[in-house]
Image (tube, rainbow, N blue to C red; front, side, top):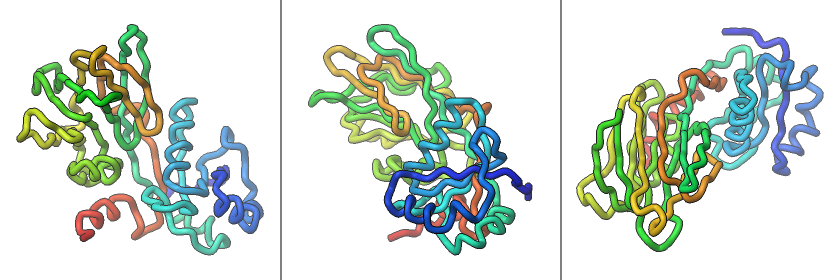
Length: 260
């Protein structure tokens, strides 16, 4: 395992995280600024971890991230244990590599926007009118008209989040698959989604966009009144999460399938 000599510390503004940082964590290592670090320790919850990873994607400097759960679910985090063992735990941590989705969206006014999503990209109706979407995969029309509340495309890392709530499949982390899942579909009635190779390019075109406006959300970023959304895995922006042995993300994804 690689040894990280220069570590940065990022702390969420949640009271638990701030209290832990001020109590022990700030004094157990010679922390360096993020721009000088070889890896970063993240204190908080899943939301703050996603925020940290997106910040690295935005600036184009990606380093491994080791999270300690001081939030709620902590699916992307490690258990918060004795701070004095932190540096030793990081040295033994197992890296897991995650490739995000890259979304290129065009709005009704013709503007183009590019975002990345670590969990999922979801299209959602903006009004009481159902959305109507054309679904293409690798430039081939697969569903000419999907009538629904929305649709989402999830990575394996995000398959246990919104995708699972929408009755989508759980994907093993090393499966090289992505999940295309409808949200409250009306037509076609028997279509419940698709599991696709992660090399696939997915296109979602909004039909009757002015009458039936649709927004798109890439993790925590929302764009309204979209006309077209094109999605593919961003292999040039791979992220690395560090996990304690026996507490890794792939094991949690498998375990989630046996929760009753």
